[in-house]
Amino acid sequence: LETQLKELANNTLENSAPRLSTIELNKEALNFSIAHFTIFNATEREDLHGHNYQLECKATAPLSDTGLLFDYAILKKMLRAMCDEIDEKMILPSRSPHLEIEHGNDYTYGIFNGERIPFLPRDLMILPIANSTVEELSHYFLDRVLNHPDLADAGIVELYIKILSSPGQGASAHWSHN
Image (tube, rainbow, N blue to C red):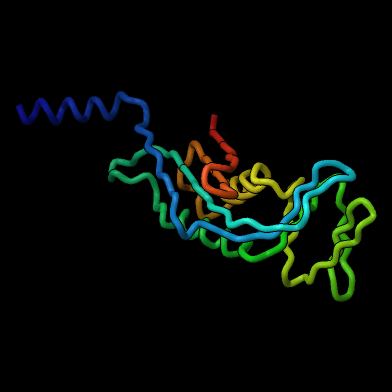
């Protein structure tokens, strides 16, 4: 019987599709606070304000014969570093069709609808996004994870990033190898 069970297990492993599993990271440490304003059109924007954001991540990859997907401590460390990098910053979108960014001697200016809004460079982070929304932030983080060299060999086939601006309110971005 023992021999038959081993043979059955070997045949099952050899003849089946890869066994996929998903690591889910929803940790209190994956958070950041930023100031921003959302731009609605060429003449309307929100007032400057801030949020305490929460990041969630799901990564799907084949389960190895050792019972591991990949070293997801790498992913946790990477996400934490990305949150720390943006934490306590004012963000401006560099790809907005309605906002110009001008660098001066002492200030960086966001120019919107005739308003010239000054920011100290040390407090500002200019992101390659079209608007400072949870939708754009979820894609910003997704793209950074997908292009990070430390995960190049992780075998990730699906990645999901969710950014919440408050409990129950957020947006997500999803990538699949297919």
